[in-house]
Length: 405
Image (cartoon, rainbow, N blue to C red; front, side):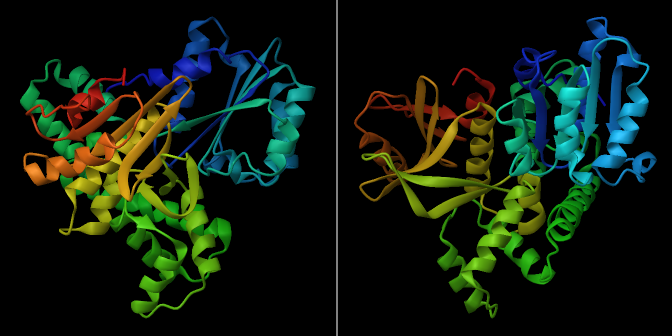
């Protein structure tokens, strides 16, 4: 497989190399966390750090089956590092497999001259005790599946030149199969098998086993429902009513708990709604997006919405660009994304096409109601430019390629 340097993530972590902060890398299984750790290790070696000072523990390996809890881990680490001279670089891959691992990580900060890096496949890795123990002495980096730009980089390394028509073909496959790194090596049938295997592993290991889920059939039904309806506005009550109509009777508390477990495993990402005029965050009727459009392909079969896929792709790209995202509401009209980061705000509408005048007017109307001077975009697959009234119309592929937005 061609080597893709995940520069946007490395750029953030470089300034913390050799600093006291623990580097915590989280994300979906098989999204590239392990490979990213190895890129960090390679950079250390290029800086002149000896191999003997770099300790790497891939905790999913059978070699570490006997390491069950923090005491086992302590015995291993102190034994492995007792003869190392100088700073030690500790890399723990899938640290959540060790019971009470938080106690060990905090002790290494105190007992060793160590620079510590760890990965985990749960968004709540930093909740509870670890957050209390570390009290701000960590940085967190969330790794996402490959962006469209990273896939283009891979293709350019492999094929050297890519035409605009090639880009469109690559994007169409990206819409269907998503950005999990290993899928780039497979044919279409193998991609689906691989996605199915990853999905099953996440559901089994990161949701069912971790949370002692009993009603597995309901869990699977709920995940499928949420993925198929990605980008729709939901409340817990509306989900309960739908399930009741389908003959499934569960409490809102159960739905809420299961949704939290699904979010923690990085299958779904929630976006809250906001009243644009008052900037008030609404506590009900949220949107959920899928971490990778390949999972949408798995769950929907022939009954797909290209518009939902496009909205999902844009949402994930905005997260990669470090925006805080809410779904806007203004005078009863929806704005797909309000995107904020320090000293920058943009508004975005996503549609498959606005060639039809009625659709075009609808997509522009909500943005036209916003009375500020922040940039406003309508993103579609169209190649015609319908920009007007200060609102910029862009092709989605061009938006994805332009990382300055």
